[in-house]
Length: 138
Image (cartoon, rainbow, N blue to C red):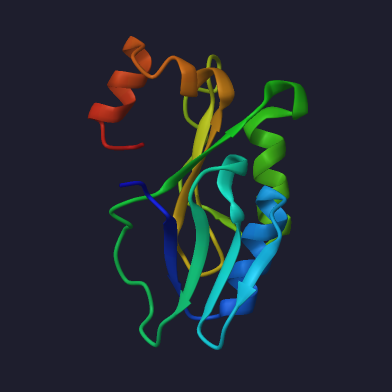
């Protein structure tokens, strides 16, 4: 078995697909009346999909995507500016600003995702990362 799709429930199919396609530089590979697929994450990973639903999101996601950003591309702050220009809103302050910054964001439908420093993804077992996880922030 393998994970084939990561599916977001959304109220505006086109807006959600356009946001995530632009943020992650992915192409639309399939479009239906109530479903859109983007190209696989990481080239061979699961497909990012969007399903049109009538109900609005009302509680925090139980699952979210961490998007690794490179310090050489301006890091979490620059990625946050890009996400905001595409329609995202910050959902937390910038955490661990001095070492491995990360921040929680909401896409245009309110689904949470995190922008994290690439090095933080590699060193998830550090004391600081564990302390942040225990606090429930990330």
